[in-house]
Length: 189
Image (tube, rainbow, N blue to C red):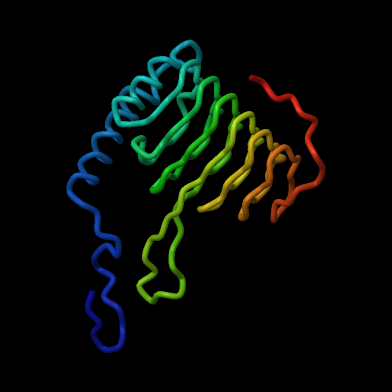
């Protein structure tokens, strides 16, 4: 990136992607548009899971993902057995997003692994993984920030903004999200 006259030349992308990544993103975009998104909402979970697996996602048995879910990089997605991702969830995963078994990410939630380094004048993209534990529930319209781990059994209340790790078996809420009280244990084997 060159500087002329004291100003940054921002005519090119500040993040350099390999040709392989660019091609994979294009192919996944075509697949999502033609085959994933138009699939019927109900009963086609296996079809959508298969498409995600074809692009490198690790998807457990009996996972239900709605057709309006957006996944940036399927190869950076891991979902445990029996989990559910609701409609219009956005999985913005430049880094790994791992969702444990028997967990729920409810409608309109945003799992965001990417941000920008605001201390660098070129504002480059940075990213960190997100982990959601087993038997956790991220309720509707939540935002989960890069680098966050949500513990096993934890409930994140609707419209919460999760910018820090949340402990296991807690009910958490707010902006910023924080633990409110213990969640009664319903641990399954």
